[in-house]
Image 1: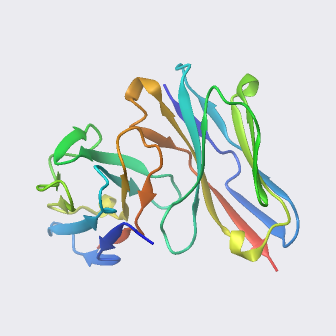
Image 2: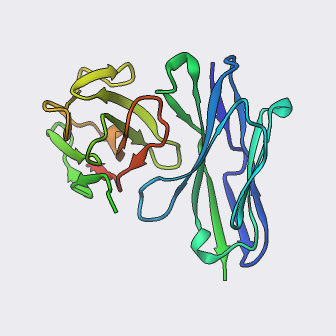
Amino acid sequence: AQKVTQAQTEISVVEKEDVTLDCVYETRDTTYYLFWYKQPPSGELVFLIRRNSFDEQNEISGRYSWNFQKSTSSFNFTITASQVVDSAVYFCALSEAETSYDKVIFGPGTSLSVIP
Amino acid sequence: EAEVAQSPRYKITEKSQAVAFWCDPISGHATLYWYRQILGQGPELLVQFQDESVVDDSQLPKDRFSAERLKGVDSTLKIQPAELGDSAMYLCASSEHRGNTEAFFGQGTRLTVV
């Protein structure tokens, strides 16, 4: 069965610190997508990234970077030089080819607080 | 910028009453999702539409929940009768086509059942 684990329930960091949010997934499918979403206090989920299971190349987008390691089934997310606006709940998610990628399984989320 | 519209933003209802939520996806998006997010948890898919057809409603409690997308555009999710355990955020999302290439979410409806 597919499953997404985000072991960190809450993280607090001081502004300008780097922070890494962990994500570990389980799947029997060899083809799948991994996602990260941000949910600010306003409630909507904001898409951050999608990564195909065949693409293990790490990605950097501004202050955000993602480390995909198939060997450890992890897809970690790092924010460099955190800012107060980064305070939100972050969800890691997984969808599999078996379900035509339609069914997205979300992790429980990590609540990040960036303190000024 | 195009966005997914949901209304109402907040709803308080008494248990055993009926309640309905509305979602207008981004124009041209064929796939529409309804998710339920219990406080402190990640969203769970309730139902998925492709145009006006239901693709997946396996997680929808059909004894009390119903969803429709009659013209393949906007959608309504109904709960009748509401129970205390239905208190949650109900999120609507849309994507251009199946496969969740990139789903765009609305701001959600926060339901409180008292």
